[in-house]
Length: 327
Image (cartoon, rainbow, N blue to C red):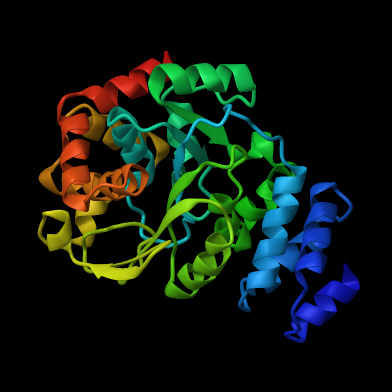
């Protein structure tokens, strides 16, 4: 580890093979907390390369417990986090709306590190029991159109560094990796990233993977469609910039997306939105993100996908998916 740290401090880069090897060794517990913290911290002060990110991705996938849903096409809505915006759990709520629209969702998630409440925090609070049992997850996917893949149960390396990440309390390259290492390898993905540089890196990586994707970055810093301004969207075919009007709504204010200061507050907002008590602004941002995912999965126009998302939410189908999953 010492030689690797010295090279990184001197702004040298690792090859894909070196990056893969070092993360595999971290995942196997070969280094102490101080060494791991130093390694993580260096990447908070310098840019990560495509080869390094790809090497880390390959390491986590090699170490992970895989899940096989017998070739069923699924999608994941998993942002990087780390944008520091303290929004409500937009991608997780949107995942239930997408499930209510007839799309199979394999939601990869974790506890919040740089935010008050990650997707796993709110799902756990609401009574969902995490599991890595394939039969249980397959049953959930069949009955609810959605299952939750809690990252630490599938990725030993993430479990190894979890306490260190929480102590640091800031975004790290593991935020970048989360959406890239869903253990069931979904066929489709809508992923939000916290800056344009990471969007570029993701585009390079995902173009080389057999997956239909949309990469999202709100140009004012959110790792999702925030509707507080324009949004950069990168897909397999094109790069576009979409305005709130393209999502059938007006510009929102940051306070419209407030996520609360505790897991309880976040969970209350979560349930209110899915149960039909959302504000107009909350509803709009959920439909925008869900619509983008539905459009990507079903290959239909965005306007049609937003209508399907609206039907899922307003009919109560999305909320029923949540209740079925938890029960």
